[in-house]
Image (spheres, helix red, strand yellow):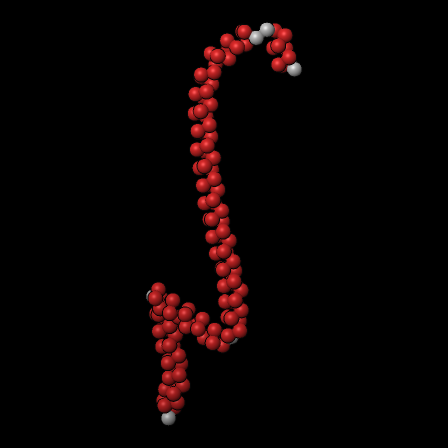
Length: 126
């Protein structure tokens, strides 16, 4: 009878030890660890649904706001790039026309200053 009592006393401990060993082996594997975390989170969510609801509401709203701001930033950047490209093309076109005009005017402008009398050159500077 003392042997049976010892066997009964050790059996609950052994079954608990076996369960711990199984959970340790499962946790040792990467997939088992993820499954264990999922199980714990699921139990916690079922136990405290309002807490998890508030998490979803707050962090979901924060995620939506970040997504909105990110998309708005990308649209603004695209618009700025387009405007910069247009400006760059306008500046290049202006430089090409002004450089062509300057090369044509430079001989003429030198001859014009030589032909102007000194009194009209003084009036032009004033």
